[in-house]
Length: 276
Image (tube, rainbow, N blue to C red; front, side, top):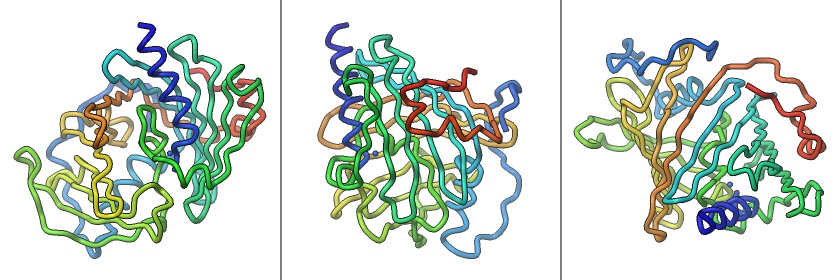
């Protein structure tokens, strides 16, 4: 157990320097595998942008659990959109030794997000602002990687179509996404969408021609929450470390009009976080 706590602590500390990083309580339902007929795609951006609109681009309160071997962490995320960019507040709940830890991420145009971090005594009870060069120079992916929860704003990626493929017997449409620079920790993103449902089943992150991380889900991992088909289970694999991290979405509630005072760096210390 002590080893697991140390592993979580190391991972959570490293994430601070690694972001190089309609739910109304209705009963959860598995996403319909026979999705409604989809419009004909006019360009390569139509499929990923429609997916991001459905899955990521709405204000919400979310609870996640991550597991890797003996290590486990639970955290809440408050997410809101302003002027096409997202703000995310991460509130670590478990294990108890890290329940004072909180992170605020603000997306910016150009990909160099603003990141504020508070960890109680570990940051001398101060809120630490991390400069963009810290984010860009370090490895993107760790056990608790902000990149796995950061939504994609419109205009951040460019797209091109790739040949169709098959994942575990599921026919897929493949789209290649690129960034102008590797400021998000990758320069190419290979997206595999189930041809029948338009659900994202796999994301492969490429940097300098080498795959550095992969996020995977199955059609059965999706559930419908008020018209949003969300992945409630994903596997994250980072090449070179020999392990996989389970990402479990425990709860999701669409929550418009979240107040401004939640998304301030001062609130990381005051801890006026939404409870749900």
